[in-house]
Length: 112
Length: 108
Image 1 (tube, chains in turn yellow, green):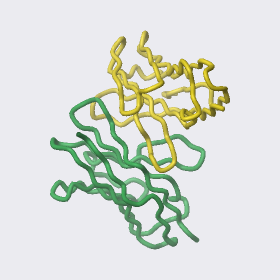
Image 2: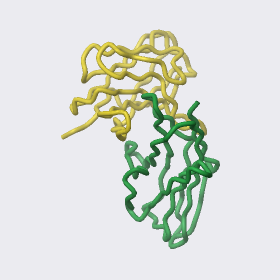
Image 3: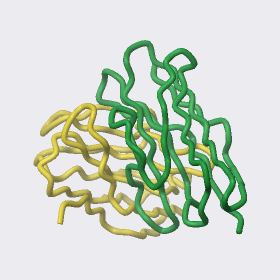
């Protein structure tokens, strides 16, 4: 089944403890992206990647890192999480510039 | 710069009534516009895109370049339409910009 898989679905952590949220897609999509969803703010793009070893900042990249060493994987790294990064995170992929996005199920992160 | 505005955070209508979710965009080129929907406890999924000119689940959306709008419409709302709706714009770059979202509630 074609899908975008994120792990974990839920994560509770403490301030400053490094964490990684994984994202994998099996559709051979070149483009992948991370979003955070916050009430009243909608979806905001954190980082995106147009292909392997090609990543770029979105609208809210501060406090996040990403890597794209393989086409299928696009992990989101929080080196030192803070409470303002408590949010619902979505990974997404698409095959081309004007194609619709395929979303993962989301990761609900709580930083205390 | 690309920008998408959904002026209504919340919209509540009765079952059987018409629905219109507003979306306005700002982009200097030729935009590709989408509507995504998120049902309760589910992932975001594509509802429709303007280039397809199709009706999905009774919803339609017409791109109005003069008014820079892409409003989503349905003539008769159903309870299962209750969800969060996002308008999104893809311009020349690889960014896909989303609006703030409108939570639609259909009352029985």
